[in-house]
Length: 120
Image 1 (cartoon, rainbow, N blue to C red):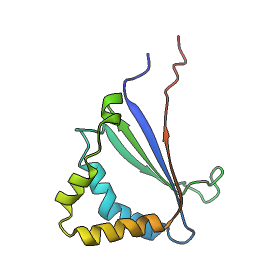
Image 2 (cartoon, rainbow, N blue to C red):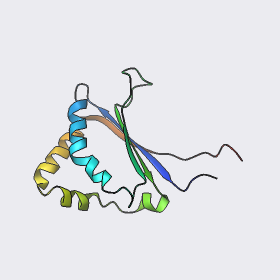
Image 3 (tube, rainbow, N blue to C red):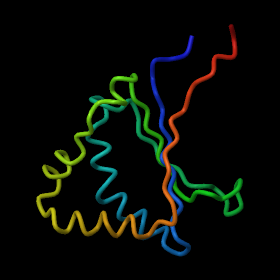
Image 4 (cartoon, helix red, strand yellow):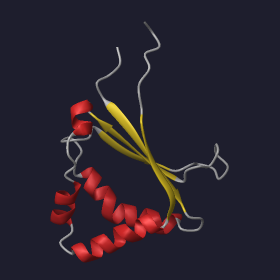
């Protein structure tokens, strides 16, 4: 029987030569907001980048996997704005850095995974 958990992969394709800047902004601003939701809304948050330059089709350069305990948690309204206001009192700098993080992207897409039961 498939788990009630729901996993979403968030893919990013960062502009060539900008990966380190993107990672620094992600670590400083977005990751703490995600981490603050562990246990409450998320079961896990994991980050990835291809190990080698030529892995796969190279459509992505950074990915985040977020696992929710169930469908309801996945569909619940986000509290990210509320969390970020509490964590980052200097909202002007926070918003500028988040805008810059997205300016560094060529593409971004989300994939909600559906588990397939192989043993019936």
